[in-house]
Structure formats: C-alpha cells, structure tokens
Image 1 (cartoon, rainbow, N blue to C red):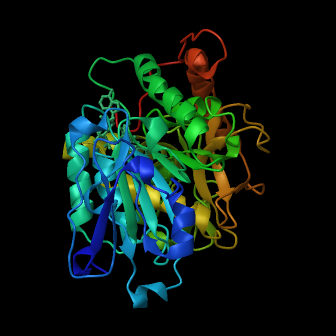
Image 2 (cartoon, helix red, strand yellow):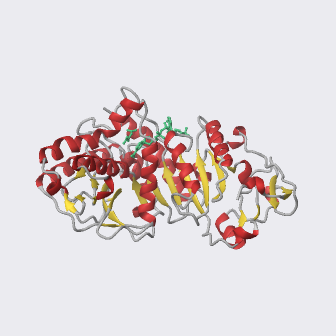
Image 3 (cartoon, rainbow, N blue to C red):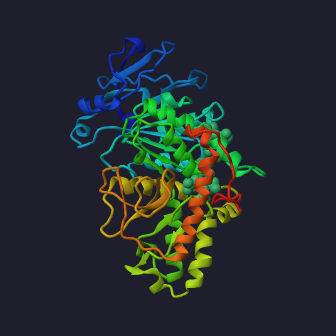
Length: 438
Ligand SMILES: NC(=O)C1=CN([C@@H]2O[C@H](COP(=O)(O)OP(=O)(O)OC[C@H]3O[C@@H](n4cnc5c(N)ncnc54)[C@H](OP(=O)(O)O)[C@@H]3O)[C@@H](O)[C@H]2O)C=CC1
Ligand SMILES: O=C([O-])CC(=O)C(=O)O
C-alpha cells in the first residue's frame, strides 16, 4: 500500500500530551495502525493521522539541527493512520525494531533497502528502522531516509534517525553495527583497535541501557571480532551469545572459490567454516567443507592449491576488490549480512552449517576462551545457534587456527582498557591486515 494513496485526517498534539507509549511494537500488534514515534520535544508538534477523509497532512520533516542527541521519526514515517480493510486481514507479525549504525555508509546503502523490502525478515514481517549517524553524516542520513520514503515499501512502518546511540537503540531487537572509522594510510592496527574500540564500547553501553534485553547484535565495522568483544563486555545485561562478528562474507567468498576450481555452481558447496579472525589470518576450512556432499579434497585433488592459493585468495579477496573498485566490498557485504541474519531466523538445512564470529566460552574445539572467534554454527531458526561438534582437524588446520587465535588474544590485550580488564597493552604478533588491506 502506498502512503500517498491514503486519504488521511490529522490532529496535532504536543508530544507531552500523547497517550501512545514508546513501545511501537505493542501498539502495532493491537491496532494494526501505521505506527509512529512521538517527537520527543515540544519544539515541533507531533502529527497523528487516521484514515477518514481525503485530506493528507504533511508531516513535519526532521531537520539536522533538531537532532542533537535525539532520535526522531522521519518525514512520512511520523504519520499514523488506520490500515485499509484489505491490509487488516493480512497475517502480519508484530513489528520488529532494527537499529543500524553507519547508516549513511556504503554497506548500509544496500542493506537498508533489502531489509525494508522484506527480503531479510520475510514478507509478513513489518519493520522499524532506527538509523544511527553522527554530526558528520546527519545530512546524508536524511538523504537515506528520503530515499526510503520514496521507495514506498509496504513493510517499512517506521524510520527514525539520530546521532545518540542511547536514543536510537531504544527497544532494538536487532542491532547491525556497521559504522567504524576506516584504516587510513600509515595507520597501525593498534590505533584502529583503539579508535574503533571506543565507538563499540560506547555502543555496547547504549545497547545495555536501551535495547531489548535479547537484542541480537551483528558487528560489521572492523576489526569486527574485537569490536564485537568490546561491545559485548560493555553490555553485561545482554547474553554474550547474542553477539556476532560478521565472517559470512568470508564464507561466501570461500564457497565461490571452491566452486570455481571444482567447476560446479556455488550452491553445491556446503559445510564451509571460516575459523578465527576477520583478517588475513582467517582460516577457510577445506578439510570439513563439502562439494556435492563429498569432502573437498576428494573433488579437488590439487591439495597444494587448497593450502596455498585458495587460502590466500579468500584471506585477501577484499584487498583485491579494493584495488579494482577503489573502495571496499559494500554490496556483497550487505548480502552477507542478510545471509547471516537469515541463518539465525531460519532452520539450518540438515547436515549443513554456517560461520559466524561468536563468543568462545564453552567451545568444544579447545579454542581459547573469552574471545570472539569465527566457528561453525547451526540454528533452529529462533535467533539462537549451537556450535557444530562433528568437525575434524589436522595439523595444517590446527596450526592456522592457532595463528588466528594468537592474533585475537593479542588484540584483546590491546583493548583491555575498553573491556574493563586493566590497561591496554599492544604486542600484536605482526601488523596483520584486514581482508581489505594489502
Ligand atoms: N566484516 C566484514 O565482512 C566487512 C566489514 N567492513 C567494514 O564495515 C565498515 C563500514 O564499511 P562501509 O559502509 O563500506 O564504510 P563507509 O565509509 O561507507 O561508512 C562507514 C561509516 O562509519 C562511520 N564512522 C564512524 N566513525 C567514523 C570515523 N571516526 N571516521 C569516519 N567514519 C566513521 C561513518 O558514519 P557516521 O559518521 O554516521 O558515524 C560512515 O558512514 C568498515 O569498518 C569496514 O571495514 C567492510 C566490508 C566487510
Ligand atoms: O577491510 C575492509 O574494510 C573490507 C573488508 O573487511 C573485507 O573486504 O572483507
């Protein structure tokens, strides 16, 4: 249903007089109304509308200067109105709140439109997008919100934008943390860990204070494993299991390379684990992966290629792409975020698994505890996961896993000041790269 098709009558009230609660999801489930967030200041009157006449009231759009520390509904998403009769009969689920940081960045520019279209959470799942930007990006964020308005997505029921994570993360059930400072020329990995770590410490605190207690958090901004650890440590109320570092792009890249070498379409490659850090120490596991249900080593006999070329290709794929494109992977990263979410909300196919950077406590592989490490996971589709037990190791795999583990342990020591575990001390084994760096 296009918003413009509605005939609407509106009344203006001041936000202090509104009886609507800030929990839009409960409102939504009761009334099947287009929901809205009341403007939290009395500067602008809030407009509430219901379908009654042929008048349409123009909502007051949020202006950049209004957004100091506030998260506010944007433009048409400030309207509320009754759904048309045929919409009310739809079996839509309860609205879910999805917070996205770095929302004006390149990855988000692909991701937000996929979420709003229903491609991620399904055709019966209305969504509210809560977009986090900064003073630097607020104009661009308004541009993003305008494009979302103009897309007329029926499932997109709310959009709010803001620069204060405590406001933006309010009641979030998913937090997709994409915003981070890119590593510039001459910048040490240690500096990046500190600068971005501070962003994720702050966002962890904000999630702890404001988000839904069972919020699922996917950290994309690099260095994503250690950022996820920092975020988790600053959010003690949220279960540690709910934090993920995105390694799904690496899994997808590895599947593509194996398919290419074996001469099969990539849907024939399964059981692909990425172990470890989203860096050039990551380990794409060709020992446990399968092609057409067979062990990779039975299909690809060139084991030297697997150990040397394949592994390095996956580890450095992002960097090769940057050289071609002049910027890092954005569309394929957005696709992999969609894959990562869908893997948690749909049951994993029998016998298969997916990779995610998750908290190591209690892992069955002997990997050091208290880090975020990419490992093989399965889900029942309830947002949760279990680690896969039946994987095998050989000396090659173990040696590589140890290297990535050592790197993550060193990164953890480096950010001790951000996890509440003392003074940060950086003795990184070598200045390893993000996949996008060469
Ligand atoms: N895990 C993975 O597989 C992958 C991870 N990445 C990582 O995702 C992140 C985002 O990538 P992408 O969307 O392409 O990047 P962009 O540069 O397009 O956007 C990044 C956003 O980060 C925010 N940001 C936060 N702090 C700073 C800062 N100090 N300086 C500059 N920008 C800052 C900016 O938004 P604002 O001003 O609103 O805060 C900016 O819009 C990067 O860290 C990248 O390395 C990329 C590809 C794959
Ligand atoms: O280094 C980057 O920003 C890009 C990245 O993570 C990747 O391509 O895997």
